[in-house]
Figure (spheres, rainbow, N blue to C red):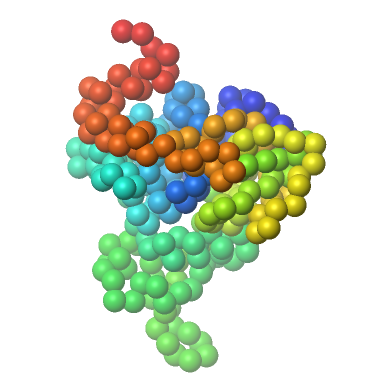
Length: 269
């Protein structure tokens, strides 16, 4: 059964230096508060994993938490580049960042393989692209039945996956709805998992199309109202577009970012 913990305690217990950490969410239910708590706890040498890293990954990279990023697209959605990500790759600031790039389909299939206990996934998705020449974890494979040339990618099994959801009950069962991306697969593939939720309730009311993560597949649940802001949580709050626009100015300048980071950590000038 999942433990109900504060966010601070959950991150302290579950996220360790050198871990492979996935914070998943696709435009919606992005675990921003959890990512910022990782920054506050000064975790280092993380391999960050996410299909679509956005501003919370920009923050983690800029804070020096990451040594590698495994991803399929990165940007400030609707605004532009991730400037802390770019600075780390191009100028090694604040520390060098290795990258491993895949397609969306490749990343999704890697999580599915990890959740299924398989060593790799097979797909057609890289045919005609240059990614196999750039990424060592994309390999050709021949179908033993048809002889067709396909592509294999290794399973993803994060040390810890963190996602955000709308609700959990007191037994640690989690309920999420709306755009749910690969959160379920990422949790099932991980050795440990943390789910931050808008609220903990006595009973989960049925909702059409909702995904349920049973308490026995979740390590810890933390009640964090607003934990996905500035992304949105269906049924709770809308996306704060102005926050994404404002991040562009903060992220593109090292001095402005350092001030933001000091503010987050409660450091006074």
